[in-house]
Image (tube, rainbow, N blue to C red):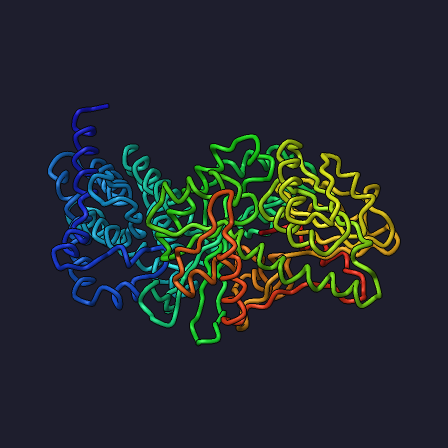
Length: 582
């Protein structure tokens, strides 16, 4: 590489990286972190930071774009000018981290820099003026049509690329503009993904920053696909469905693809209002790891969970909830909380247990009303090594005649059995590592973190009732073919107000029915609404006082636990709802 080209690249990158607007904001005592490009556009930034800041910042970025070109114009025509323009854009978008505090969000789309760059090319590099004006006109036209700044910017850059490729430009200039377009596409990949997900702000839309309104709180919740088909629920991956259906892409390839993707915003739940009039916004995040990855690559799962926590903080959330297998990683959230102390992390275990407390008495009461002596019933608890399932066993112990504790660690099960026997000497307890022992039970309660079903039709006797709290489902749907079997999905909660979302996540896309959420997500919302950050669920233990707190506060705020125990059998569609989140 020629020395003048190398010097141009270095000098232009350094100049482009200078955070002039940020320095001015800090000088004025403003906090530009609140104007994250993830949440708001130019209009909202002006409202949050003030018109004077936006005018000065606009002028500084414009001058910087022109200066990058002017620095090299005396040397060697427009080839080096385009090379400088490319390097300056890369510096503007990807400055050295030392220039910014930790977690400071990536800058916006660089439109003002690009505008200054185009002016510099016309003035200093002797480009025809129309070649600078035309990309700006195309930008404005596409922006006016779509109201997406990202699409306008890319359209303008592609217009510039076409002009350079069709004109007798030097080879270096062509490669520089190609690099400029490639850098923009890479920088805007998340913006383009959010356009597909319908979560990217449009011009004219007002998105309030978290903490700006006293009557609104913001939470975040991360989910993941429980099977390959669930990946296609995300609009940015929906095009893969055709390839998958025609076996042009395998499950292993989908699994690999999911491992390459960092957490991103998939939707936003709005319209939830507590009984005291406070709105709760919930930002839905995802990193598309399939269940097997959580077992095979736990370090990657922890890394993605931490990245999700940092993204949630950048988006303005005060609480970060872990859904499905995310709740099992990093010592059930402890490592994520330690890595990102700036946001409050919860695995949702307390209110999940609380929702069970609402369901079990209803189920037992239904059997009493049938004239059944509960002391003649046998209950099986699958997953009894876990906190939630052991809580079920403790609730059932004084009510039924026999409890079968089923898990994978027999030594731990025996210790749990001894504890229950001491507290309830009139109840018989059995510990087992065989799910088939459920065949004795009239009532089966499950709460495991297994990615696959563990209870099948062969393990269930006719007339048994099954309460499935597992996420994904612990119970295979074939149990519905056994005569008289009732399958009750657990942990379904209806938030107060009318939950809405622009891309279907409030209308059943979560697989819990229209307007419903899993209990662990509801816990995240309650913590955010009450700012009761000391109540987060982390680690293996769940405090009884926290379970009681969420049950009480959920009722006060207007959350409703939905449990299907009516005489009609649970439809297969609702049973499938238990296979997605929590």
